Every structure is written in C-alpha cells, then in structure tokens.
Image 1 (cartoon, rainbow, N blue to C red):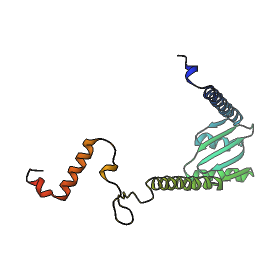
Image 2: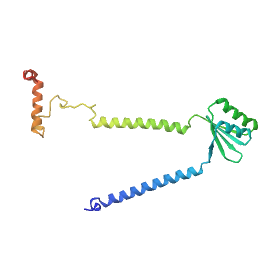
Image 3: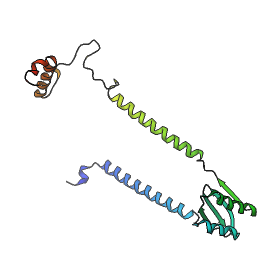
Image 4: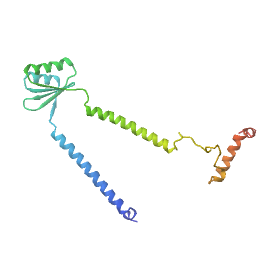
Length: 192
C-alpha cells in the first residue's frame, strides 16, 4: 500500500511545511554567519615583541586595552592584537601611546547589564521549570503527597475483592498474603 494512502493529506502538508521552514531557517543562519564574518576586520595576532616594535616605530594610531588583550590600530587601518599577561608590560605600551597623545580606550572586565540579566534570568527560569515539574508530579499523585488511601474519611473500606476485576490467580495470591499478615504463626510452622 503506498505511503500516501496511509498518511492523511493534512499531515503530509504539515510535514512539507515543516521541512521547508527548517531549510529556510538553516539557510538564513548560514547567511547571517557568513555576512557577519565578512564584515569583521582582519586582526593579526602578534607577540609582545612585535607589538612593542609597532609602538616604537610610531606605526600605531590607537590602542584598545581589553583586560590582557591589547589591540593596536595601525596607521594603515590594519589591526594587531597581542595577549600581554604581565601588568608592567601592558603599562609600558599604554605609557608609550599616552606620551604621543594617541587614542587609548579601556574596556571593562565586568559583564554588561544585559549579560547579567540573561545569566540570572536563565537561572530563575530553570528554577521555575523545576518547580513546575515538581508541582505537576505532586498534582498527578492526587495531591496527597504520594499516599494511597483505601479507606474513606469515615474509616470504612469501600473496595472489596468483588470490586476487583482481573486475574483470579492475583486475587488468590493477595488473599493468601492477607491471611499471612493476620496469622503469621500458622505459616511459620511450614517454614515461610
């Protein structure tokens, strides 16, 4: 039997729409990625010695200090970056730019407000999801905290063996278990 006869037309249409939407989303994501990568300036990774040489040749136009990362914009517009972990060495580069009166920019090491809000918001969202799951589990158990009550509020038992439909062997085993609980000494003589 052909597959098209087994699956209703609405489900086939929904599957085609979902596939087309997925393909469109993937194409858009790839396009955005390549567009943003082509717009980023090329930054050359250099070591401290090469960075110091750029400064001493007076080839640097501006300096950006981002923690341990120093990014120098050269006179021709190209950029060079170096990771300088030694604080006095960073200060030496900053001092050389400062003495020449060139532009120096410092970036904060503290996360931005949006980043902080997103981090805390995600934590609270996960806490809320866990609370919702716990509440649903509690509610699905009847809201009794997992208790199983056979008796009603008056203390009488409303369920009897006659109310149980099913396998007769299971009813017989349950009846035997109840007899054991009522008179265990009788079964102890047999070795149970």
